[in-house]
Length: 389
Ligand SMILES: *[C@@H]1O[C@H](CO)[C@@H](O)[C@H](O)[C@H]1NC(C)=O
Ligand SMILES: *[C@@H]1O[C@H](CO)[C@@H](O)[C@H](O)[C@H]1NC(C)=O
Ligand SMILES: *[C@@H]1O[C@H](CO)[C@@H](O)[C@H](O)[C@H]1NC(C)=O
Ligand SMILES: *[C@@H]1O[C@H](CO)[C@@H](O)[C@H](O)[C@H]1NC(C)=O
Image 1 (tube, rainbow, N blue to C red):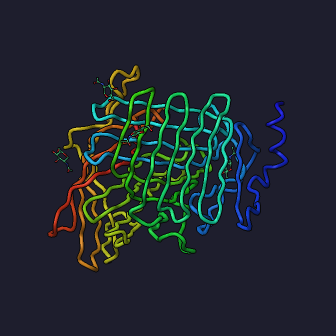
Image 2: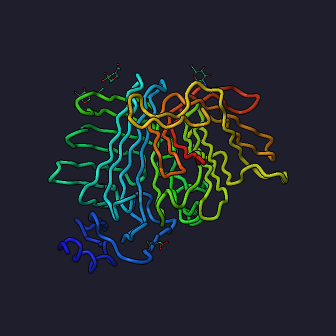
Image 3: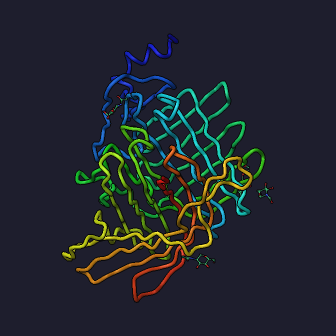
């Protein structure tokens, strides 16, 4: 057995260690490729834990934690999605993984998934700094974010990709129930075995990367979030639709998710106006109208783009069965109803998540606003999982 597999067993209960740096309390969390324990691990879930801090301090053969980022260009023609991940993915237990997919305005795509040796997350009073690195392969991805989530800079330095991505928040960080961080009433557990926190529901994004020597420049909107699951995504989730958008004075985040654990549907909708939360609900339209706020999501087929495999890719999957959404935010009490329509404009990725699941990343254009009020145009990014039988 390799030494690196032995040492962390002693450390696993205390991977997150506190250190005193210049009088400021900081925490460090280190995770190594292939290091895991058997049986249950603590999934965390304290709503007051900072959204960028790791919730898992030890890994087993199924738990995973992801810090995800995305973006859409102001004209909807380009998109980016990437994540830093710790934990088990198919065929790789307790991996330290990096994933990136982009689409250029002409539809050309690039996707990579890279496994590295270690990751570290260092959090102090004012900022969080994370590094996923493999010195032998020359791969180094990092992000630094201000503790108020307002400013985040990602730097990528690897043989394939070099450059930066920055995101400045336009909205406060929220829990799935729409409360703002920090709140003891926030509940990061969104569905069985699935935790979710929106660190930046919507922000402005600037990306400047060089990918295999080709520039990828994007100015637009996007967001970033954190998920941590006790089981693999393909085992716990069925279908979902996850959307973030900036539309005139509005911004929103929506996630409709069907669990494979209990087959129930879980739902979250948060609408912001001028950076404030103006609407939140976890209720998908039900048949008994009781005056409470609810939301609704309708899959549409009228847009020009279905999620599809990259042109020239050897694996050509059938396209998604839908091309966008209509999203309704309804407050019967206040007699207010906001409606937004979204059409996909580009596929960022589209691949099989299991033999029965396909997962896609998209960017799109959106129009809408308050029914009977001024209508605005904007942009969206997000992901969807479709069950195929
Ligand atoms: C890992 O830990 C989680 C959370 O305690 C648990 O639900 C899951 O079953 C464990 N996985 C394995 C393979 O033991
Ligand atoms: C599409 O755009 C990319 C990035 O600018 C470029 O490298 C590529 O050659 C273009 N492809 C086509 C088919 O024009
Ligand atoms: C992108 O980064 C390169 C290399 O640092 C720099 O020369 C270029 O000016 C940047 N482009 C933009 C649009 O910021
Ligand atoms: C998206 O853009 C296309 C092309 O400009 C337009 O035809 C379509 O109506 C737009 N869809 C939405 C939902 O705004």
